[in-house]
View 1 (spheres, rainbow, N blue to C red):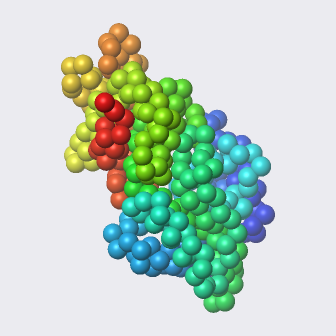
View 2: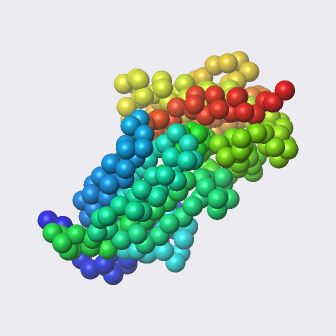
View 3: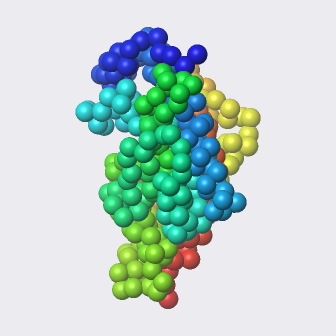
Length: 341
C-alpha cells in the first residue's frame, strides 16, 4: 500500500528530467510525471498523522485557529526544483505541509513550544524562524520540518512533513502576494517581478510585524508608513486589489467560467471590469485579445490587463482554503496602519 515502484534515486532522476524540460514547451514524459505523483502521494499518510498533532496543540491554544493542509502541486514542485539546482525531488522537505493561523505572535511561539515538547515519535529535523530571519520578499512564518517515524509502516519512515505557523495578519499578507502574483503573472513571493510591487510587499511585511511586535509606533514605523502611503497611491493598490477580488468572486460564482482562459481588463478610472472567456483550444484567440487589451491599457492610465487560467484560480483556492484570495482583510489592515495623520 505505502511503497514506491521505483527507488528513491530514480525519484531524484525523474525530478531532474522534469526540470530539464521545464519552460521548453515540451510535454513531460508520462513515466516521470507518474513517478512524481507516486512520490508525493506517499506523503499523505505521514501528513495526516503529523497534522493531527499540530491541530490538537493549536486548538488547545485557540479554538478558532485556522487549520489546513496540502500536498504540493506538480507545477510548484517543478518550479521550485528549477529555482534550486542543488535540490533533488527525493529530498524535498515540503511535499506535504500543514498550516496553523493564529491570532498573534505570542500564540505562534506558544504553539511552537507546545509542539516541540510534545511526546511523539516523529523527529524534528529543521526549524526556520522567518519571523526574525525574514525572507527578502517579506515572507514571515515559523517553519518546522519533521521526519516521519512509524513502526506500522516503516517504508514511510524518513519522509519529511513541513508545518507552517503564522499570524492572521501575516496570512493576509501572503494571500495578497498570491493574488497580485496570479494576476500579474509574477512570482512575487519568490522575489521576481515589478520592483515597486516587491518593495511594497516588503514594506507591508515589516510594518505588519512592527504592529504586532511593538507596543507603540516608533520612528521607523512612521517612516515605513509614509513610504507605503506613497507606493499605495502610485500602484493604485486599493482599487487594484479590490478589483482583483471582485474578479475572482465573479469567476468563482459563474458557470460561464468553469474552464479555459480569461482575459481580464481592470479600469480603475472608469471603475469597471471586463472579462472575456476563451475555451482551452482557443489559445490563439486568447493571445490576440490579450495583446489588444495590453495596447488599450498602455494608452489608458489606471488600466491593467491579465490573462488567467480558471484552473489556476481553482488551484489557489485549494492552497488557500481559509481565506480564498479574499484581500479585504489585507486592505483593512493596510488602511488601518498605513495612513497615519
